Length: 283
Image (cartoon, rainbow, N blue to C red):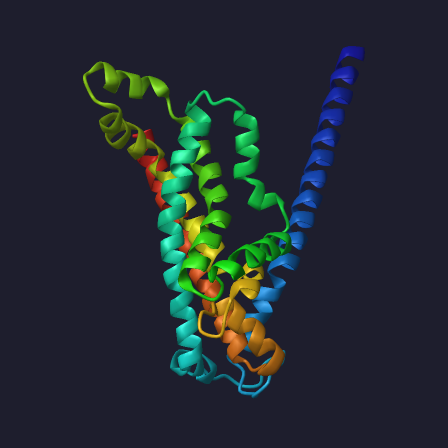
């Protein structure tokens, strides 16, 4: 009888323990949900403001119209800033992906003296406040005539984007088995052949993710752009800052929505590609 009572007491204790864990899990999920909702709330508000009929930004919106999107796509100054940003982001993506991939290989595979220090310098743009970097760029680029032009932006944004590529490609290299590359070398492949035919296909999802992050880091960058922009060379983020100060209309909300959609599309694409790559490797 005593043993039965003891077993019953243990069952009750286990049930209460599981119930307590379930309650704690629910509270954690609710807390995280509230935090995420707070983070995305500004974006959720901007989208409806971009389709309101009022000639000023208001929430909740009055009516529904797409005139602000039409105004954005028909405005030469907005289109000029958009294409300028896209061109810079494209060159930045290419340069940062190549430089970041090579740097990641050197940092992960190489036996470099002071490798930890080099790695710290590589990811420094992620740690140092962008306002500090922007001032440094302006003081360096102004005497060289690199402010307000394509080349200055490409150099600055490449430096800011390289750390993203180094981190993602470095993580992919950490998961890659070096024995596969050694096997290719033992079979007679050169270093370049082993890299392009064995290493690169296996780390390609990391390289692609780094390229997407590099594009977004350039396209969405605002602080450095504010310092090194000129009258002609003006990014879309700098144009947004100017219109917020002097011409605040729902076009700003429309542009913000377009930028958000571009970012979400790119991130969604890379996530789908990553899952397909993982599913393919499982098979």
